[in-house]
Image (cartoon, rainbow, N blue to C red; front, side, top):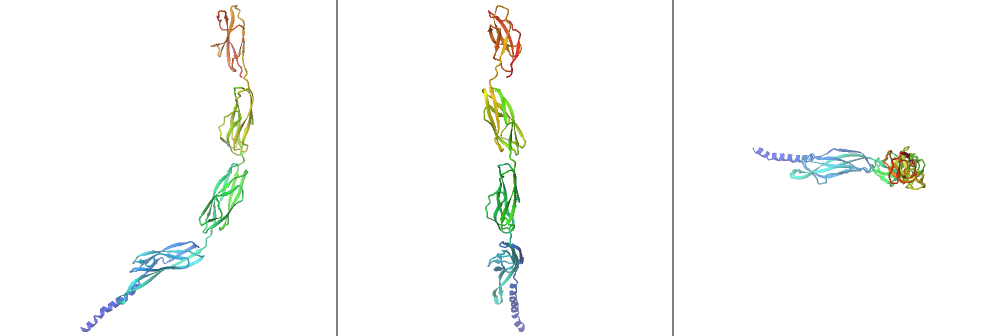
Length: 434
C-alpha cells in the first residue's frame, strides 16, 4: 500500500507534462491560406497597371494577428489588411495585388503575409507563434504602339453648284496602345481646306480628334486631292483621299430676245408670249421686272427653279395709254451665270380709229313734211332709240358708233304739226374692229 501511494502522486504530474508538451505543437499548426497561391499577369503595357485579387483565410483554430504584408519584385504592389488586423478562425480577407511594369521584359515576384498567434508553454508561460503565406507572381512588361485611323477613310463631296461649298467632318482615332502626336495635316489641292484643327495634338490610346474639311470648287469639273496626316504613330503618314466636282454653270435662255407689239390703240391692250429655259445646271429664277408700266409680265410664278432642259412660258401685255412709240426691257434675275437675262420690248400707241355711219334716204313727196327723225337699235326690229330729230335734210352721219358692233336704222318723216310717219324700211350695218 505504501508503494502504491508513492507512485500515485507522479501519475498526474506525468499527464500534465504531456499536455504542456503538446501545446506548442498545436500553436504551430495555425495556418494562413491564399487562394490562388500564384498569379500570372501576362503582358501589360509599360506604365499601365493591372490588378488581381487573392483571398487570405485563417484556416486554423485560433485568432491570427497580421504583422507583415509585403510585395517583392519590380512593379508588384499589394494592398489589404494592415499590420495589427485580426483574422478569426475561418475568417477571410482580400489582398489586391497589382503589376505596373516599368520596363520591357519578364518580371517575377511574390507577396508575403505573416501573422502571429498567442501560445501557452510549460510552467504556464505565454508565448507567440508565427505563420506565413506566400503568393508567387509573374508578369511581362511590353511596349505599346500608336496607330492613326481616319473615319471616313475617303471623303467624297459630290457635285456642287458654282459658287457654293460643302463641309464634311473627319475623325482621327488612335487605335493603338500608346500615345501619338499628330504634327501636320497637309492638303494637296487648294479647293480643300481644313478647319477646327489645332496642331500639334496628342492622342492617348483610344482618343479621337474631330475637325472639318471644306470643299470650295473654283472651276467646273472633277477635283481631287489628298489630306496627309503626319504623326509619330506606327503609320507616320496617313493619306485620306478627297474628291468633289462642280457642275457646269447654269444659263437662263430667253426666247424671243425681243417682243414687238406693233401698233395698239391707246387704251387697248395686246399680249405676246415668251419662254424661259435652263441649260448646263438647274437655274432658280428669283424675279422678273419690266422697266415700264405699259408692259406687264404675267403667266409665271416666281421664284421658280428650272431643271436642265425644262422650259416655262410667260406673257407680256402692252397697255399703251397715249399715242406714240414705247420701249422697255424685261429682266429676269437668277443664279445663272448670265443673270440678268434681258428681253427688249417695243410697241406704238395709236389713237383709236373713229368709225361713223353715213345714212341717206329719199325725200317725202308730201308738201307737209318739214323734217325727219333717225332711229337706231342694237338688235333687228328694235326697240329703237332716237339718234337725230328734226333733220330737214335727207342724210345723216352717226359718229357715236363703237367698233365691232352691229346697228339697225329706221327713218320717219315729221310734218309741221309734229305728226310722225311710220318707220321706213330697216337698214343694217356692221362697224369694223378696230
